[in-house]
Image (cartoon, rainbow, N blue to C red; front, side, top):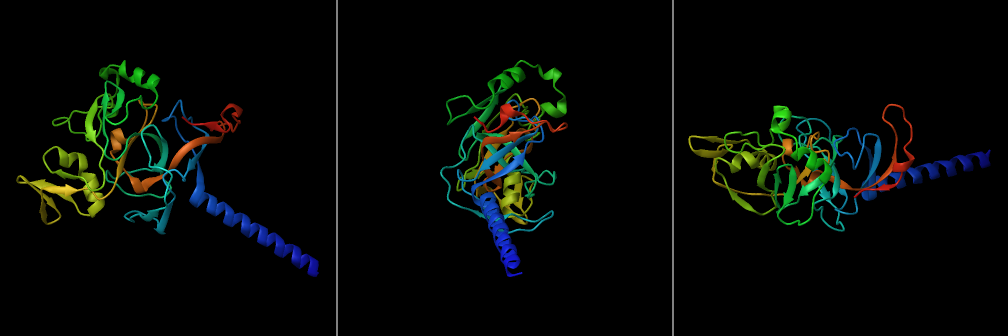
Length: 288
C-alpha cells in the first residue's frame, strides 16, 4: 500500500512540475497561436501554428488579470533583447479589442502582422508600397504590394479602399496611398489642430481615459481645454503581407507597445483548417 501511495505522490509531483514548467514557458519564453486567416499570406497561411518569441521585446507580465469590456490592461514588461523593429512579424492583441472604434484590450483577441513602423518612425504607403523614413530596405512582401499597385482604385470596393483616419476631406488616404504618418513615441509632444487630432485622438483617449472633442475652435479633454499633448507610451503600425486582404493598422490605427506579445520566429507545425491534414513542408519553418 505504501508503495502505491509513493507512486501516486511521485506522479503528482511530476504532473505539478510539468504544469509549472509549461506555465513558465508560456509566460516568459514563448507562446503558440493558430493563424486563422490568409492576411499574412504568403508568409503565413491559415492553419499554421506559430511561436511568439517573448525574449525579443521582453515578456509581458500582468499586474491584474480581469476579463470583460472596459477593463484596462495593467502590466509591465521584462527586459528584452531588443525592441520590435520594421519587418518583424509580431503577435499582438488587436487594438480594437471589442470593435468599438477605440483602443481597448481584449486578452484572447490576437493578431499576427508585420511591423511597418516603430515608435518615432514616419511611414507612408506610396502606390501600394510601404515606406519608412528610418528603414532603407523593402518592408513586407513586394509581390503582393506590386499586385495592389497595379490594381486600379475602381476595382477595389470603397469600404476596402478607404483607410485610417477615414477623412476624405482632410486626408483622402487609401490602402494604396497613405501618409506621411508619424508613429508616436513616448515623450514626444504634438500640437492639436484640425488634422492631428483626428490621427491621434484614439491614443489621447486611451492614455487619459477621457473623451477628446473639438468645438467652437477649441479642443477639450473632458472639461479642460487642450492645445498640446505629450504621448505617454510607444506605438506601432502593423500590416499584413496580404495587403489587398488584411484588417490591420491601415484601418485600425496604432497599436500600443503593451499590446505586443512576441516576435514570431518559426512555425511549429501546420495543418489544413478543414481536413486536419498535416503540412510537413511547413514544420519548424523559419519566418522572415
